[in-house]
Image (cartoon, rainbow, N blue to C red; front, top):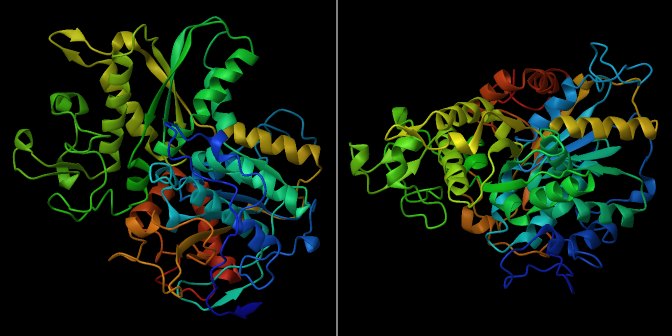
Length: 517
């Protein structure tokens, strides 16, 4: 069903219970969870029938096994979580008893995936003192999955209303889990429906703890977005779980905020520009002049950056003479951040050896090969004939992807509630992405059509409007480099995306050039 609507008006919030504590040294997820009554966006969804986001939950078909499973992330990184679900085979599909049967356990489930690409990276809202705005975005993500509206393409003034609601929500984003999972659960309670919300942090912490024996010493690295690190979600969850499960060893945590890595993976122009030949004015990643994420010239041989094909941008032909130095490839972001993490560990008194690294951002599993390579280089790195990091790390550091434990939790929930679908197939899955809403005159975009950085993080919570339009995945809104990565790193999920374009009427209006094949 198609609907045409005028530009949504601002909904001014009389009171917003959530606030960003700008005087605190650490704004944690617990502080973010102090929303007591309701956000302006919740009022718009639940009460304002003229608002685009209004949803009538009295008609919600809850506890219906035929409904799809909703999955969302701030970008395409969450597809690594979806891919784990698509390939998960730990149970018998008939009896649901433990034991693989060579048929994926969710093979008859339809998934609806949302990438909130226009508003990403979520991890930077914390540093911009806009965690309350982030919560608003996260509530909108959940509302999209539970509602029926979407646009067929960017710039359309008419929206469709034939998307199915979901029977469970997987928050395939660490930052959204840290800052928003409790808000989603609180919001869902207000709707009066019964809907499970599964996050990734508990799953990742549990997976890391399983690396250790009960009395073993060691360090766990948390490699995540700046926002996730600031929430201390992984550190608190890991240490609490350690005590709860009776681990007696000296287990420590070293945190590394991967500033710019997720953005580089998703080709965000403030952090990577593949056709650049020289340093850029709008660059926001680690550099020689970045006070928070400074490239240390004395560690250039340790970083071992790849300078080929403009993967590093320098203002001199000789890398040793650079006065301006910028990362311009995801692999170099990995190198910078892993060296920084090991330097933190090296300078920590009584540091225990690194034995596991939690990939605390769903984009990071795309870089597993590079991460393993750099960890291997650091293990073998010598200076003046001495190993610098070998005593501080295991020879084979385990990488922890929370996705498997997410799949196990989802399977247990569907089994408990008798919600397994017996009719659909994962091939019927649908994939959506947010883009700047070109029908909203207040938005500000850059030369490639994305929100400018200042506009993105300059907006205020409570100004309820359609900043974005949610449309199907297409070649118009996902770079070819990203699609090629999907094809090689998550092939089964890529097939689902292809099928969405080949067989689903929701993509019928896309041109041949826009379709993903």
